[in-house]
Image (cartoon, rainbow over the protein chains, first blue to last red):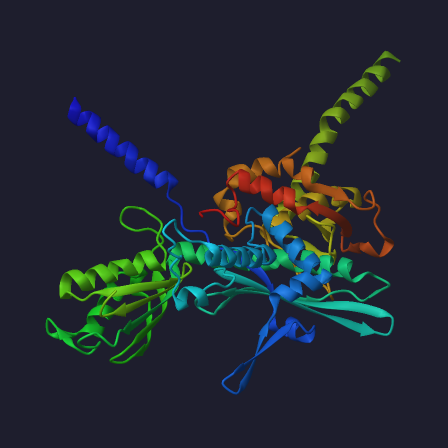
Length: 315
Length: 173
């Protein structure tokens, strides 16, 4: 009787795990393109060791451009209608500022401050797994106006354009710009979403595409060419990646004694326990393998769902 | 006299029986045209939010049947076929992600596009079915009629997603 109950319980638990386990949902954020920011004067300039570097100033853009607000809000509205709410750029920027202020002011009862490494500080930027980059230009032909609208969906980790839609709308006389922009969004968003759906379908069929970087600390006694059990460490890592990707799909883009770069790595969406996996969860398997098999410690650092770096030698 | 009345009565009864059958036969021909993709769709303008404004070209022996069938063709086309853009109006891809969806879910779609089917829910004729002179053409023995139709795509997509016929954008996450 007890045995039967145990089996029944085990079946129930496994069923509930299967039912509730869902793939990790990518976050999407709408941002103006660098071209739009540059054309409309929303850029920041830095002097980086003698070279002038220009970066888009999103904060000033969202605070100053009412047209940008119309476009972002319309896209957010339509995507929410499709059951895929987006991260809002303006809110993300505010949250980052708030977090930074809280971190600066926080202290424990004993006066200890919150730990923050230079890398943590560097990573305090607005983040998303997929960027929806928008850009538009107003074309004037005499009294007639039209809008050329470009929408690009960019994967933050593979740098691939996974969806896109663009085109020039009808020439109109006397139409207001916000109305024309709304029409442009309505015209193009369905085609964009259709390609995005194709990307998600591919993800469910062939696994999530991530990139993996292997590096080594200076303190590590050895490198990726050091031999363990008759083969170089780099080859052991490559074999593990091959064994643990969907149909062994990956590219070794770069390999030296100090670093390896794997791209187009297709990882399964779920692990053996049917739990959703991202790049960090997947590379933990490699970390464990190196520790248990060769006694090599390593540290994982991650960026979102699709990029992980394993630095070998110590934590 | 009595025989004449009886004849007229019998004729009337036969007409009552035959006419719907003839009408049904005609509709069957139009339905076969729809199934065989014998219609054309082009974008007219960007519709108001959640709708597509399209012109559907339908073939039929009778223009009034063509106008009626255009409603079915419009929904059929948006689900399975999509349409190409014209000039500055961009085309749209079909709602169906699989090219064999109609066969895979034939039970659902035979009811959906059947007599009094649910497809009517998503359609409105923009000018009450009035067809411009240049949109009514005689091609051989048939008419080719172009009707401008507004389709509630958001509602259509949502109902198909809820019925499990197509996947939603966030489905699976």
